[in-house]
Image (cartoon, rainbow, N blue to C red; front, side):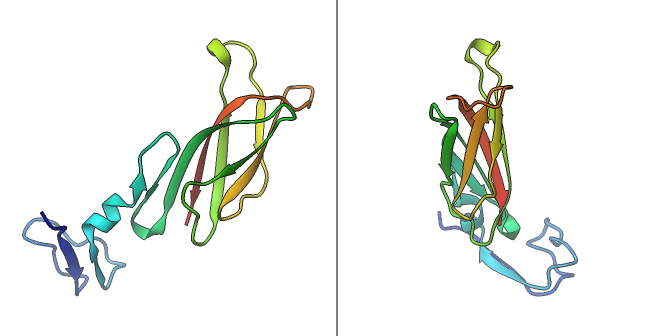
Length: 133
């Protein structure tokens, strides 16, 4: 089945018979619904692009013994990466909780440093999430 296309010419129009206008800020909108829905990679390291060009990306990586890693985003951000968050993963759920910090992200990657409470670099697995446009 081909992807349906929506087109809003006037902000007071309705889409079809049952869907209300998207919001009062849109004067016109044209595009394939399938393009909006399918710009994604729903894997363990993946991304989802939303309406308005917001992109969420996520994954898991590991630092080396010095505590450093570079995360390369699966989809480059066209404009900027606005935020990156990290969470350390502990073996067996106890102990080994490390501080995982990030450098200033670029459109394609971010540097990561993991350390113990003493500040020494450590090898650890961590999860990350990045948001941008």
